[in-house]
Length: 137
Ligand code: CMP
Image (cartoon, rainbow, N blue to C red; front, top):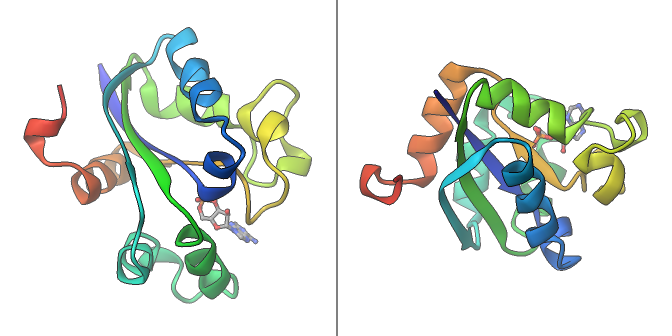
């Protein structure tokens, strides 16, 4: 049993499709071990995406992630990390396979509806960033 972190980004929250996206997870064998809606501060977003600090899109990414609330979740299930990435589709929605979350709900590589951990090591770090142990059950 694995756990991974999901973020439903400000574009998808603003579109009111949080329930539809959470249903994709639950309908595909992932369980919500934790979920909450939060407004990230600039410092939060900068710290969360620190790995991208040298990339040219870092400033826009941080500004976008604080443009409205996000919904963060811990997804749990067999192969949860890879399964979530399959359900999300490619980072650029124009390249995302039909039926994936990004193909169905995202507009651009910046406003791409969801984030998911890209390794089990990062999943543990990202889950710890947002959730206390007692919030995960
Ligand atoms: P995410 O999975 O949240 O991880 C970093 C984010 O940076 C990514 O999704 C995209 O929304 C955003 N981004 C913007 N431009 C790029 C790019 N050229 N390559 C990768 N990610 C990008």
